[in-house]
Amino acid sequence: MCSLCPWIKFCLGCKLACDDTEFLYNAASSTHLAIDWDPTALHLRYQSSLEKAFQEHESYIASKREATEPINLDYCLEMFTKEEELGENEKYYCSKCRTHQMASKKLEIYRLPPVLIVHLKRFQYIQNKWVKCQKVVNFPHADFDPTSYLAKVPKTNILRHRRLSERTETSKGWVDENANEKSKSDEDGVTNRSTSSRFSESSLQSAPQDLHQHRLLPGHDPFDLKYRLYGMVCHSGILGGGHYVSYAINPNGSWYAYNDSSCRPVAGTEEMDTTCAYMLFYERKQLDAASYLPDVSDREMKDTKEIDEDYDENEMKKVCRVM
Image (cartoon, rainbow, N blue to C red):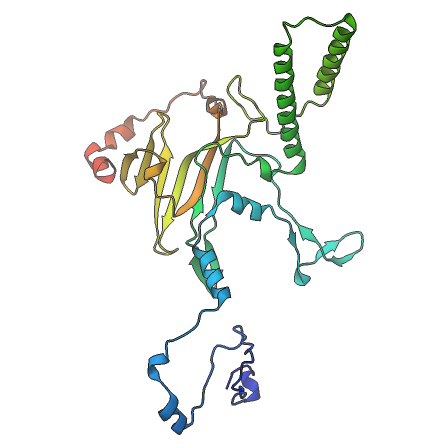
């Protein structure tokens, strides 16, 4: 007998036919399934060895496989920027119609920051408790290009710049190959010059605009949105009793691992445990980081004599050590 009926009906259970009909089990309101065995049938037919025997449905196998298979950062960004249809309980209020209407929403990135921080949300509030998602997320360590996830306007500007660059390179190659060849006639020469002039004019008129305005080193292409990983925070365990370990790249180009009071160098990203990555820190390549620092040339350093007198080097060595 099932337990689909609410408690206020004082139902002792609905009889379930012994056939191949699928039982519509509602996990939200029903959590038990009671079986009233006939004493004779229980004694002659019941096999206690089969109590834990079960068959896994193909949907459960597929769901289990998806839960354990790793995904990549591109997939996460695709889901983040994917258009979402709002449900019946999430209708959008239209100020023109003055009523709630069915709608869809989409999140897009209009302008990328110089330092891009990706927060992998691994905690979900399920059944009055926080549950951590142990999904492995693979992510690029160098040459990460998030152009595909930009809004239409900045994305179009970047793609247009790339097409113009390709056409310019093709035009230069064609000119270099034919620079030493003699023109067949003066008319052909005039035609070639007019074609090149029209191409230059169209390129200047449709020159894309850099909407990011990042401070880059001289000679770097402002439309080449490539990022490199320079820091990572990993989390292991649960929300209340977990542990954090961070990795960061030093200005000298070496990676270091920070685990509580210990700090040790690592050979590279191959030695880092990226399976439990929680936060990723990307910096745009060829970024002029010094230009983002505040100007302190007119500031005076405070007198730290009292602090230096209270400083105990031996005590600090107990707190932090470099391995």
